[in-house]
Image (cartoon, rainbow, N blue to C red; front, side, top):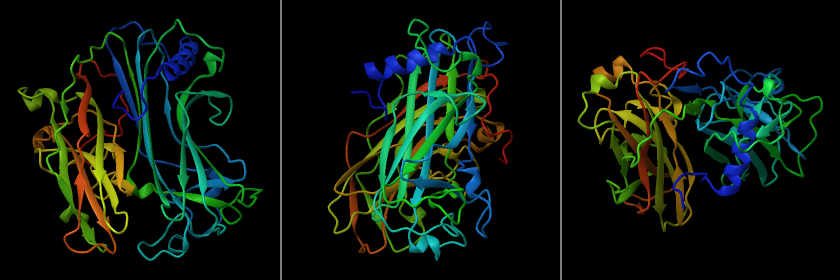
Length: 415
């Protein structure tokens, strides 16, 4: 079985490739379609929600995004990125992560931070909320006609686990031979990551407004992101991608209370980018990354297990450029996770977008998977086990000469 979060099973491959083929004649400007080995990587680092739910209350603003919960669910775009012209054999990959919160009393009346997106919304107590997420290729009308790219993922958000971390990862090689009728190729403009939240007990909210709707809060402060990769077939991919499958730590200490997680964070897996090559030669290069963490625990209460990927200056460093958020902001590492009951797996796909001169100056050439464990009522000395079967892999490498039209969100070292 493929290690990736969403494998390339025959049915998924057939469905996604068929639709992608239908778009071959209608995406992008076409200016770069015949120029050889090229890759474009786009990044959206600002998760959003329904535009009608960020107005009319004191907690509104771009930092307080919301997904409506209704009986049938309302498809809501969280991320969007442009689609350029597709060609035979082109490697396509979509990666997205977002944390959605089922509103509780501490979210309606926050005590850990000044504001949350649950404030000013219609209160509810029911369980569970069904959350469906998917990638779609759409036209200029983001909520209009379109087709799925890959399968839909269903997540259950509950009172017990009300911070729902959703990660979706899909990749496919484009094939013109498998054509399926669908969206008019001339209208295909964007790939979107879309979320639909529903519950049979949800209250109606027409016309939609923050005050009248039950909502899921989009946790924008975590620094999560979406990536969209389009690499021409002539861009070589490694036959044996470098992979680290041996965890550096056998256990993780469980943080007690609400202390500084840096005290218990550990690098579990690490990969050096292009060992033996001078780091200055890697400026402008880009890398696709896959990773997975496995944890086993037997504590009285399920601890929270979280983690992130970072481009760092050593194989043991927990700081640097945080890849899932494509940012240098120390406050937005992209760190997220969830409660782990007995055993759990966490997948962390990402893209190291455009190695910059400041990365070279700082000596950043190691991709590290950092993890931590915490529980408010934990006792001193509690630990969880890092199980074998996890990994960190550099799946694809792109040189500076191959990278075109890349919108990574990193235009300078202060981003």
